[in-house]
Amino acid sequence: MLRPSYIQANWPAPNNVRAFTSCRSGGFSRPPFDSFNLAQHVGDDQHLVNKNRQLLPNYKNFTWLNQTHSNHCVDLGECGTDGDLALEADACFATSKKQVCAVMTADCLPILFCDQQGSCVAAVHAGWRGLADGVIENTVSKMPVNAKTLMAWMGPAISQQHFEVGEEIKEIFSDYPQAFRQNQQTSEQKYFADLYHIAKQKMLALGITHIFGGEYCTYKQEDLFFSHRRITHQAANREMPTATTGRIVSAIYLS
Image (cartoon, rainbow, N blue to C red; front, side, top):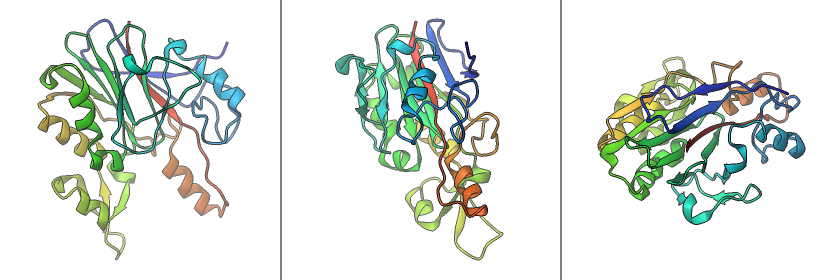
């Protein structure tokens, strides 16, 4: 029996809340998906991905999302759970026991929510497009609890040091100037963007003050995480035609 590695959310959540992020090792997938890839859409052997998914805690109650960098959030209580059905959304919430909210990432920011009473949980896929389109705000507005009772854990994402963007993205987030640092190593208008900072400011504006996490970097910590940007840079440096990598999952449920 393989034993994948996990990071447990480090936050003062109620005892009935289970929240974690998977790491990249301990699964069945072969290179370049070595080894605990959980995504079916990246070209990995689907049989091996299914075997990996069966290693997850409470795996029978996962609902997988078809993520498109939107702001769409679904209520899993209305959608039900079907392991073969991928819902079109980038966030979800649940109030029933055992029902798992989950998002897959490989640099984008996963955010897990729960309320202080342990009655509702949510998972959000927050890349820069989702942040710009209000995926956090839309999710919080749909959850059947007061936003001020929520706490959030920001899972592993690409850090500011490795997330270079252009002027157009900086302008999209003009309300968050502190999230951008100009790249002094180039004459182009390039900046390093802090997804963690933007997400935190958005949550604070909603009245969510109990915010945790944000200390990981998917790009830098290659032994722990998949990173789409890292593999893209490696492929370019080696003049490889394609860049392919797996996905980790951040999940939360009520026990």
